[in-house]
Image (tube, rainbow, N blue to C red):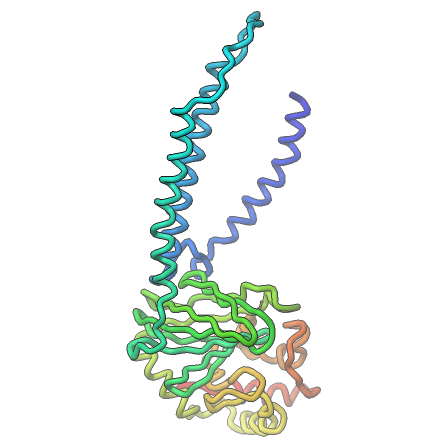
Length: 339
Ligand code: CUA
């Protein structure tokens, strides 16, 4: 008895720790348990169905187990050997048939959902076509019909399906937006597909869900679900570029000069995507720098000064910049805005 209590004593902190850790999984924009789109709904329904079935089985087993344990326990002073039973046709049929029926109940919606999720919308004119490319450690989003490329923040109109082609520029990544659906790997040399939609406007967090290197855990992105109107505006501004005057035009011009000299080899600001790095068109509108830092002056300066400290193993090649040059670049990048 004492040993058993010691056992419980040892397990308790572990259980409490797990409980504490799991409470951290409640972010509504990063939870598959709070679906905001059709795909996420379907996936959540499957989760619910299988949990209900498992809980049902668990409850029945525990109840029978407890009943038998109490009802047939050895009584004080009774040393007789109970009746020895071997085989029972009726029971064997029952405990074979019940799991069989349960598996059918689980399999039918599972298979129909799988087919619904694998539906090919690549030729549907009413569906937004997007190509997602995973890079170490950022996401490239291409809209082939609109001929635009962007990075880190994926725009889709609300209540409209998006057909997503998944590709990789280097290693295996995995595209996952818990509140909207997923996840599916982006494999080098291979194209995968998925579709998703969102039923309400908002910003939904995305993650890379496949260990892909040093900064795998920092490979975040966002899905911005906006009205059709705002989406159209966004597309127009992506192709027309920036027209907002900077707060400090002189400083921004200096920044633009540095950018043209040092950054254009990898990055673009015309919505066409750079040769190597993330497209930075309308960068001033982004909520994050490198997908993880808040897009303010301080954090952007931090990134430009030492990207390796922020995202270890990233492939950004940046010249040593003086503080003044960093300030100019920050001013310039923040001046790239839609309006
Ligand atoms: Cu990309 Cu993990």
